[in-house]
Image (cartoon, rainbow, N blue to C red):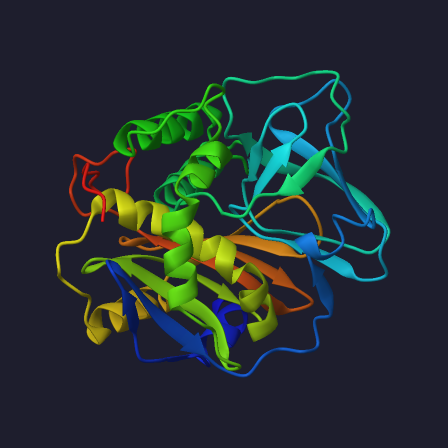
Length: 324
C-alpha cells in the first residue's frame, strides 16, 4: 500500500533553491497529473457556485460546504475562511464531489468574536494561509487525537494558544484576536515575499525554510494547483520568517533532500476525514505529515519538520522577537 500511495511523490525531483530575505524555497518538480479534474476552492466561492455556511446556530469545529459545480472542489489544509460567526481555518485537506454538501473540520482563529445572526454565507478566503508554525501544531494535534482514538480534528485550545503566541511574538493586536487581521497588518511586508518568487510549469510543490532551517512542504498533484494557492501559502510562511528575523544563514540542498527522503520513508495510516477521497497520516521521527488521495492520486501532501529540542512541546520552532 505504501509504495502505491507514494508513487506520485517518488517521481518528483528537487530543483534549485531561491532565496528572498530569510525565506528559501526548494521547488519539487515533475509531470502534472491531469486525470484529476477539479476546481480550486476560491474559483467559484464569489459567484455562488460554491457555498460556505455555518451549521445551524453555529458549530465552532465545522463548516458546511456545498459544491454546485460539475467538478470536485479541492480545499487545502490551512486555508483561512473569514466571516461567518467567526473566522476559521481548515483542519485538513478535503475534496468535495460535484453537487454535494459536506461538513468540513475547522478550527477558530478569531477567539474574540462569535457573531450569531450574521448571514451564514458571509465567508471569503483570506489572502494568507495560517502561518506555518500554527499549521504544524495543528497537524500534530490532529494526529494525537487519532492516536487517542478520537476524531480527525485539531485541538481548538492549541490553535488558540498558537494564535495568541503569534500575536505576542509579532507585537500585533486585534480587538477580536483575528488571525486574518494580523495577517493584513503585515500584508505590505509579506507581499514582498510573494513578488520575489514565481512558479514554473513543472513545479508541483515547494519545500520551504526560514534561515537555515527546513520548516515544511506543500506538494500538489499538478502545477496549476500549486500556482492557485501559492500566494496564500507564501504569505503564511512569510509570517514566520518575519517573526524569526534574518540570521544570514541559508539551508543547503542536502537539507531539503534529506527532508524529502524522510517524508518518503514515513509510515502511513489511513483515517476517516471529511469529504471524498482517502486521507492518511504519515509518521516519521522527524516529520509530521498528512496526505489526501483522490482518484488514486496524491492531491495534497502537507509536511512539517518536528523540532529536535525536547522543550518545544507545542511549538515546532523557536520563537524570537526579531523582525526582518
